[in-house]
Image (cartoon, rainbow, N blue to C red):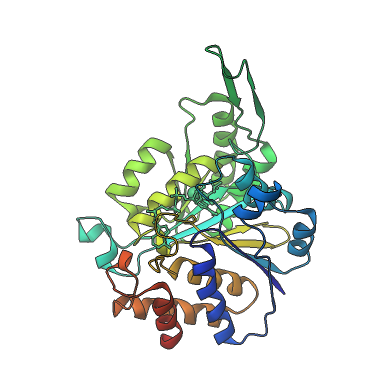
Length: 339
Ligand code: NAD
Ligand code: IPM
Ligand code: MN
């Protein structure tokens, strides 16, 4: 049994296509859909994710999530209450975000030699600026103070760097801002150097985050695995996704590297600007489903999904963001037909 949280905006539209594909594959995986976890319920009752919802997630083998976020909700307690609660309480300490370019024409990069992108961002997912430690003083006055502490623990930094090495194919690049952010910077540097010394078989490098953003644009082919903290990983993964064909194609997995439990979600959000218009690209959600079933042991079927996505992209049987004319449901049907 897997849990499905469609969420808000285009979330239900794209997860709907992923679920039709799962049905089509006929793998015998049952689904438990929590379609009451959304912004409307939060606005009505103040409940983001209830303890009962969390119990259903805990008793499943994996969770597929569409997106959470709604322009009517400005309170960060909503996203924190659903997405970050799941990441933190299930200790999903790795955010695994591949950036793979399926077709040359989808890259915004001018130089064809720079378009062979096959990178993987390993984002620390349970601490950093997202930890929720901080507070405010003298609110609503000219002397207001607002503090969000960036939390870095030895345990948290070590396990995510070790995970990055465990999935590297060619090399690992660690990204931080240790030239300016001193305490966390020193911790990341020390743990990084010790781990790198244990992996002479892999190419290791380090970049400050500003230079990493520049290098991702000037030559994304230089990267295999990038390991970084929570907020830099958030930003660099949208950048990498856009370089590799667009945010609508990017998949991700939030994983506990020890238990193997995963929360799978496309990198994109609820896209309120296109919600309900039929223009949402289902590819990110479909490739996210591929990551999920792969982790459940269906590697051949996951490869089949990626091949089907490759063929619809080659044939331009896709949504407008990828240069096609199909609606969300037509693009989903094209993927199923290609399969
Ligand atoms: P977004 O990713 O939702 O949208 C950014 C841009 O990309 C928009 O122009 C949108 O139309 C486009 N886009 C995104 N997904 C697309 C798809 N599948 N097909 C075609 N175009 C697509 O980011 P945002 O606008 O910053 O955030 C909107 C809401 O989503 C906010 O509430 C935000 O907090 C939330 N959010 C949630 C998640 C998540 O649940 N994992 C992730 C990111 C943002
Ligand atoms: C993501 C999203 C979330 C994040 C938001 C919605 C809290 O942008 O999954 O990348 O910043 O982690
Ligand atoms: Mn993000």
